[in-house]
Length: 364
Ligand code: SF4
Image (cartoon, rainbow, N blue to C red; front, side, top):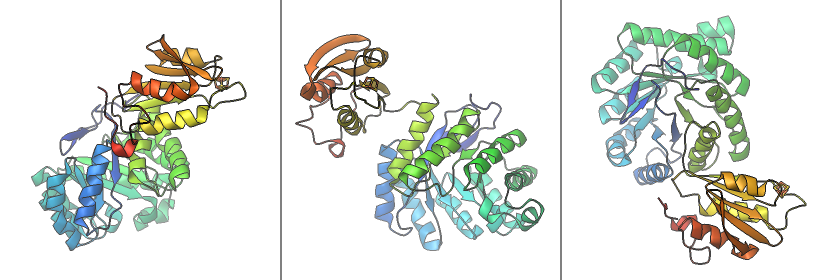
């Protein structure tokens, strides 16, 4: 499913493209000048599995914090730059792994060439982020704010950077409309060999943004296109990472943490299936180890699905069966199901453990 033949672009200790795993990234939501908050949120994102962290660099004061941010981050840091190419130069000098620029507002070829020269000298990657809201005037006049215009803009900048000898380039073409974004990425993938950064811009709040991102990013990935993803949510950035992995897991592109398979429950169910599934998901949310856990309400699909999982629960009449690797290992009363499942995972039981904030340990 992965697009082949993309060039490899180094971003800190990672490589994007060239058949490497699709990477999950997010963006800080902290004030741009609050170093403690920046470092804290970066550490939390890293712990949540975020592989690349981007932050806005709106002015020189923000750029001055970057050396400390980079030194402490433990993940590649990307500086998000608009309007002022000097901030891109300052970020590169500060040691960021990548700068994200929008040539539509950077001031033309000369300034992009300066940024590319500095980036090339220091091994920094560049993402050219084309946005439907800030296209070059000639493209807008010819095509309007359409996928064709975004693709032509991205191709134009790629060719320019190729001409001046800079190839560590990642591209994105984001529109706020999902079909337009899908069309733009699929067209762009036919034109260039750069790794592509996928995202639906201004996707929305956690529920609507998750759906729009899953449909948009998921459709592009399902076509074999995309090397790194950022889910944009007007919500907790940890949710951006979580949703990102869920999209990748749904397409079998990455594995991380538990995959909870839960039936929706219905009139055949005699246990509190919804409460149990919600609690299982909550209590295991800190696990990094890939695990398939089935929580099923009854005997119809329950034992079958539970057998397919690493660990499974299938409900009965106020009781439940615990399965492990296809074998029934226990039959317990409903109120003991949660603890029995945790015991199977080698985790403290529900009564003695404070939940995800207390840091469930990875059993592997
Ligand atoms: S597994 Fe059983 S309880 Fe769950 S939805 Fe299917 S029939 Fe209903």
